[in-house]
Image (tube, rainbow, N blue to C red):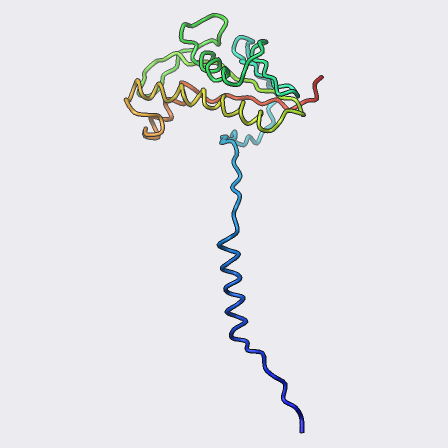
Amino acid sequence: MSKKMPEVPAASLADIAFMLLIFFLVTTTMDVDSGLERRLPQWVEEKQDEQVDVKERNIFVVLVNRNNDLLVENEWTNISELREKAKEFMANPADDASLPEKEPKEVPFFGEVMVTKGVISLSNDLDTKYGTYIAVQNELVAAINELRDELAKSKFQKSYSDLENEQQDAIREIYPSRISEAEPRKRN
């Protein structure tokens, strides 16, 4: 006579495993990475040897050092002042000779307008804190976005985000997003 081994009920194990799976799915949080929205340049097959010369007056220089200090156009500046300085530079409303040049351009919906040749140049130290780097980036992008929004409201009586694609393209031609980032360096 052999003793019968007791059976383990398999149906309840599947139920328990399913309930554990549901529990972990419900209680787990997913971190969503935030970042910067950037449009990458189009791929160019051929090697370009030509160097584009940009006049010094057309470059808005922003430097961030390892102490997270901000040097804008050779003046120490707070991040809170950066947006207005970048807006003034890119718009150049009075056609100031110390601000970027403008060139006439035919833009749909606007006709012939003067378009800035301004470029924002951002450079930071290797030891710059990531939070400061992102804050500076956000202010520079916000400056361009505010200029676009102000133009959209004055021309179309709508915010930039509410415009049709063709209208947004026209405004982007007037206020292009030209932010050049230099490779971070170790500075003293």
